[in-house]
Length: 165
Image (cartoon, rainbow, N blue to C red; front, side, top):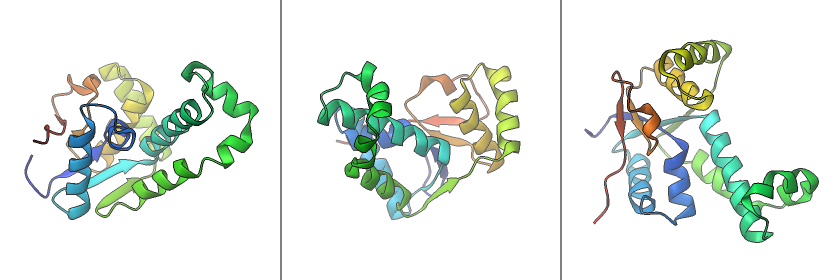
């Protein structure tokens, strides 16, 4: 992928970087450092940030409260103080929002309407269709993700960070 390319960044890139427990963690972190340094221009959406926030809260409850992943949402709903006290989750989310050379797109009713058409055209789930609609709205044709659901969309380039040696 050439330098200077604008790349839409999917939630799994941020999550692999933050959670740090997968083979994709180092390449994802390196890619985000390239966005920060200006090698690439990054764009993401509030939907992606919401996905990341939700998964970080689940990971927090699993780790800190020793709750099973299956019970985490129910536990959080019954214990709102845990949500309020998840300082690490808030800090990590702010860190993402403060990445230099990263734009965060809102989702309008027009974007949502476009996503409905994309769901029907490509068989995407709702959040993935919103990502693609946001990319369309901002004329972005490169997506950084490890998600294989975008593989049948020939009009975009799906890219995952290469392993760092």
